[in-house]
Length: 182
Image 1 (cartoon, rainbow, N blue to C red):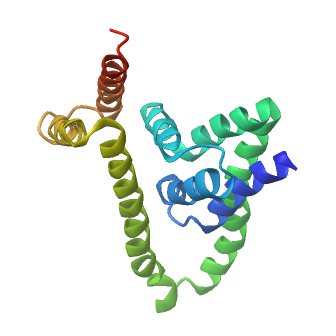
Image 2 (spheres, rainbow, N blue to C red; image 1 turned 120 degrees about the vertical axis):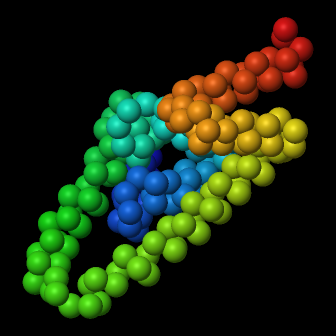
């Protein structure tokens, strides 16, 4: 039953998440955090941060890790397959349909309708992460991390992986300081 749950937790977002990995992240979060309760939002955001710092598609890295934590190596393989299976199935089916109807205006307008929905889903997820950050770190640290990350990314053009590593180091140092382990 666990492996079926792992499969569904990644297959369903893969089927519904039009736009690739970033579009499926809020859907995976809903399954992993809200539906199955395998992680808290904080734990999910940490997995997302680490996954973003590594090369390759975010959805497969998260699936492999979450699948492994819940079901071991087999769970990891099930989650990976469930993540890529919808893309393979849909790509084969939709390519046949799109090639047949490629000149119709309805097909051309699909992206126009879907993009705002993805932006809203990403905005809601960002708000939730920011809210959790304020609760766990406090408003001053959260604002400092957000502003500092923005400056490092936009002004100094630092690679996002380095900004994430810096934020993790600051978060770890803050956690050690706040727990009295220093």
